[in-house]
Structure formats: structure tokens, C-alpha cells
Length: 226
Image (cartoon, rainbow, N blue to C red; front, side, top):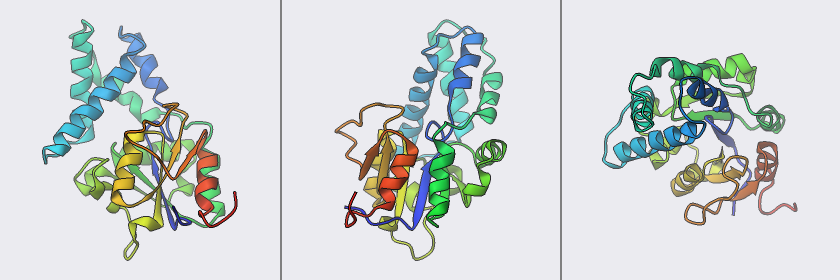
């Protein structure tokens, strides 16, 4: 059961911004088209391992190291990882992102962007895409000192005096949904990326096919008719 959110917490990478330009740059560098998924999964695996062991490493360090190891596994040891990492600074917003954020604004519910990436890059992406006016503030896990899906990452964005249940996470990743739920937040999952929410990580309070529908459903409390 969820109540109408007083704060929306949006994941950024893959939820709001597409990684497809990174795929194109990888292919140009000689990697396979599937290298994007392999790299991102390796990045998350390594970051989650560091977090579970009680450590912390910056996004750029983990992302670049995992990129080099994936390239090596594909027979490329001289990959220009800097060139591929620079692509992360010019990611386009998904088609459903603007309207979803506008729905939040129209409802008078502020939005916090919570990212495992860097705050500077995220702010730049929001500025270039024109979405910055729809986001009250950007929080990187670097500001908190722990990666999502650790509970502290989600609780670290709450306003003073706000209970976790007053906020709702919007994301396309099942692991993000699990982490936010464990932290006490309401959760809205968009199926655009994964297609099916793993039973091991779900359920979410709301499950829809696009971000706009996720926001609209979360704005309806369980006490209101659909």
C-alpha cells in the first residue's frame, strides 16, 4: 500500500537518460553491440561488491575499470576508455521522461534526481535536455558515500522531517526498486528496459510501461479509485 508521494526520487541512468550513444561509441571502437549491457552489468556488480564489503569508490573509477576489463575480455587491450566515458556527458533523454517530470510539477510534488553517476554530469545532462527546471535538486551517491541500492542512499535524499514512506522512487531497474522498498520508500517501476520485474526483486507498488503512467499511478493513493 502506498500513499500519495510528497517527493519523487528519479533514477537517472537508463530511467531518464538513454545509454545508446555509448553503445554506438563502443561499436566504433571495435567492441560488440552487446558490450554495453556487459559493461553496465559489470560496473554495477563491482560497485555493489564494494558497497556490500563496506567500501566506496567513485562512479568514474568503477565505470572506467570495468570498461577496460570488458574490452580485454573481447580481445581489445588498447581501448580509449576516456573517449567512451566522455559519451556519458551527452546522453539524450528518453521520450517519456519530460512528460513524467511535468506530471510531477503539475501535481506540485518536487523531484530529486538520485544517481550512481556524478552530480556534475547529471546536472549537465538535465541542462542540455531542458529538464533541469523540472528537477529541484540533484544528489549523487558520492554526496552520501554509498551506492544505491543501499538504504542510506535513498534515505539520504529525504527532506528534514520526512518519513521514507512519504517519498517514491521511479526507476527502470529491478535492483533499484528492491533497494528503495527496503529503505521504506514507495516504488514505481517502468518496464521499458527490463520487460519483466524479477520476482526476487519485486513487486513494486506501481508497475507500468512508461514513466508518465508510473507517475500518474503513484499520484493516486491506494485509497483512490484507478
